[in-house]
Image (cartoon, rainbow, N blue to C red):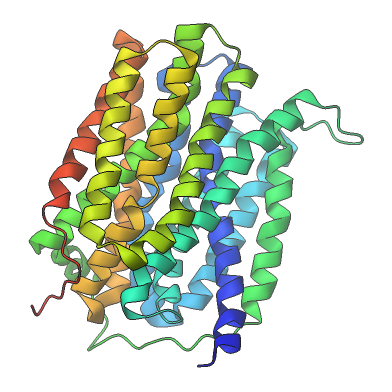
Length: 392
């Protein structure tokens, strides 16, 4: 495959990574819904928890679906579901309507994350996979950090002919989803065939019996728990400790994604020069330092620095863990991908625990929950190899 052909396939796939980032709008959206409807932290955190709940239900079946219809068609299906999820908030922001919208957003994203990462592995292979997945996360993070800005713009500007307020970000992202469907639909990508007969649901889950697969699964849970947790909790920390309003505090969510985006971009180059284990250790240590800072500091600058460190540190956790799992069992990419994306269920577990902890003792309780995830990632560092194989 020449470089021009590879690039023509890579660009629409990267646009899909951008669409994958739409799921991160749930953090800032849940804060606006909380303000609009007068919800408690526990009630508001149901929204991000609901989004990621569907990863538990749909990820493994999606891996099996890919064996039947292929990875590209599964990505197209995910974009169609995402389009529907973005259309609903145009008609209002009632509690039930937003629950339905976020449910569809979670289902679409579960389909997309399960199928898009192995689809990329058909274009970029071998040692370059981790850095390419990191670059995909960089593109995804662009959509993530733009979401709070678009929501703030919509909330503070009078938009002619529309009365959407912060919800204007939904139709804007909906247009991008349509473009992604049309572009990927016209792109042919040769997909590698799975080894042997397609696995059953039970056989997919049985792969968790392999210790390294299980460790990677929990690692993904911790990564996304920290990601969604910071996304939703950062504004609340500023409002609790400094008395900021939501529109001003929402910048902290963008700050997190700005540094996560920068981390993904630099990580795509660093991983070509530095081994995965060392880089993973540095990233985890940065997050641990930040968590200690969020317990100790009450100044705006110090809190912003901690949020930035979490964003940069958490930016490369997912692609390293995911690529390690795929390289461990290369003949079962669809099944392993489904299991790893099922680990995004951590985005349900962590916000629920953080909501209960913050209602009990304030936002420091939420930080304590995230710190547990960081400590696990430090442990996972010890199990990373530069290249792994189930046969080694």
